[in-house]
Length: 203
Ligand SMILES: *[C@@H]1O[C@H](CO)[C@@H](O)[C@H](O)[C@H]1NC(C)=O
Image 1 (cartoon, rainbow, N blue to C red):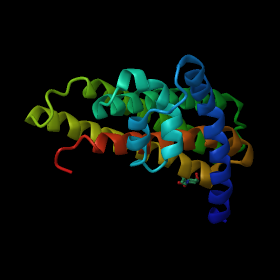
Image 2 (cartoon, helix red, strand yellow):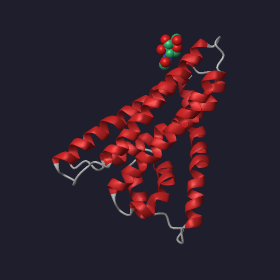
Image 3 (cartoon, rainbow, N blue to C red):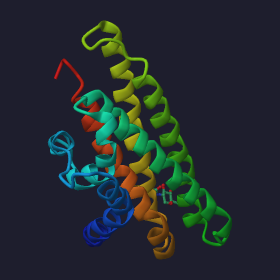
């Protein structure tokens, strides 16, 4: 049963990244004089688990990122924190509409409210930490990088915990309403972590 759910989820996903990141893509092509996607962003996103959504969500940052892996990771974290925040707000807004009789579902929604808020905090904290890193390969750099890696991994766990709880205890209505947004955040978080890990001189 879970396998079927995952399959239909994947097709929904494809639909969703097209919808949610399309506007960013459309804006970029309208604003930019060249329609060629940024090679650096393409190459870097190639190392992530979800390269298509990675490029779609980050290509509008090409002018500020230039060819800096650090700026790209920072942009990825900022976009992810922003999407996590809007998913979190959306999930919180669903709570009053949940019927008390459906206590399992209410529990799943409540779990998601908590874990999504937690993920937003960790992602924002990571953005701040990225701005505190010194020169690459200094001990200060690796210390801050370790923190970012820890927090982004924890944020990913949070988001996936929300998904698990929805998969197990959410009704069809709630799943449809929340899940796509949360899945997108999960993919963006995974990608951001991969881009952060590329900064690690110990890799
Ligand atoms: C689903 O609900 C049950 C009963 O409230 C709970 O024990 C279980 O942990 C929930 N599952 C998840 C994945 O949160």
